[in-house]
Length: 413
Ligand code: BGC
Image (cartoon, rainbow, N blue to C red; front, side):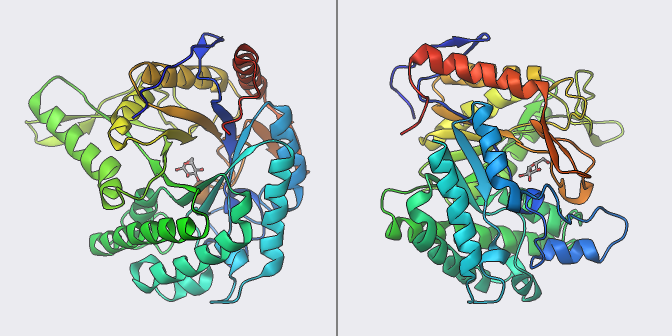
């Protein structure tokens, strides 16, 4: 837990510690385009009722322009993911051109003075791996280890923060219980196996990366929901605590000693109440602001989860937080509100050191396709033109004021 002094710096009524990281994130399949060797690509092709990722935001070719834009928008940190299926399109055959591409991306981030967060698995799998049973199979842990070894050798000198796996619980439930994502199974047993294998894969990756780069900082990006009791009554509290233990903390308990930092992805606050007659558990109605896809905007939930994350005793980075807001009506207040929530959590001892908005660019929102617009920067998918939204400039002034007040460039290192 952070026990040192917290220097307060005012900016748009938001205060941050000196050296705080501000930036945004993307993931390979959502922005790169043409990820033809992964299971999502194959699944999209098998259906005609969903968008196909196709060229996405063409970020694989336009990364220089996009990183430059992020820099111009004041970001001093940036999160990307590596596409495993580009790096290892066939089992054990590593594609040096793809590795060289990611070296160029990371070198560009260094040149621009941006701290890098690199995710190794963000929902997609090489097709060959999926065809062999994917994360249900124990052998996937070894395959992941082989891929991580290659990446750490080739790119390790350029990575500041390693995020081994993005949102393991979300992946396991969406793909193996809710049937929304490939392989669209409905089996709690399969889900359980996937989760245990992902935990083993994280632990293995943690060891491998540290063996190759002893000073590396390795963590995961954990989707964390604020489960609040709807009413001050025992049954609501019990439900909230049970959900919190299972969804937010179980995976972390399996990987406990293998985190140098904790990445928190925050989108939701959930309030459920128990109804006795007729017996059922209901979601509380939310009458406040909502994103274009109906997600409630509730920054106080972020403070709640950050305070709960203090128990792990490692620095915390908000590795994702954002909303679908095509008209950009809510995003600026959304960012201010969530940064204030971080500030409040810091004041109560949460060692939060960075905020990465989701997302830098509009992108392919998985089974929801190109409809939801999460970007600080609007993408015209016809022309691939980029247009920063007004909120991107509000975020920029927050960052600039924070950095001017501490007299530094805000870099963590
Ligand atoms: C995922 C992102 C996704 C975002 C918004 C997160 O759970 O990591 O890939 O775009 O949520 O749905």
